[in-house]
Image 1 (cartoon, helix red, strand yellow):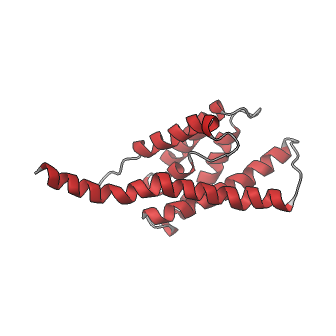
Image 2 (cartoon, rainbow, N blue to C red):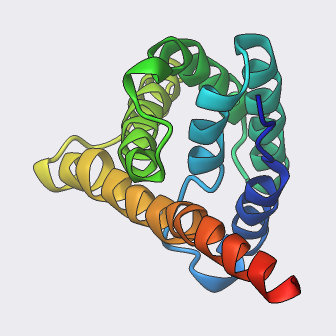
Image 3 (cartoon, rainbow, N blue to C red):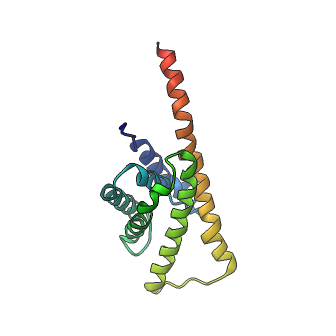
Length: 167
């Protein structure tokens, strides 16, 4: 079995997590969502839990939420839920945006639930629900397609051409 590398995708996600606030502060992307969706199919459950907690702690260190560990707990719960269903998604890069959409949708639901348990109330409106539960997951799926799926799609043909170039 060929071991697939995950560190380039971690670096891409870390880059977006670090520079998201300076470039587009009003757009709240889940920077590690595509990377975590990739780990579900490539790593076992325990390793996926560790990586999701590490990514959540990185986001907690970079964010200004008053509850430290909130994002790490959010990512851990999502990993517990979605890792068992990774076999229903193909290992192809075309399913990564859809799995990222599901990750973002569940993350928004868990976030709204936990914040309401802590007493942070949000006004309920149709536009707010549409934005939080539909538009932002779609934008996260587009982000996953542009920065994670396209490099996977282009890597194999470029690798073959580079091999022919060398010899």
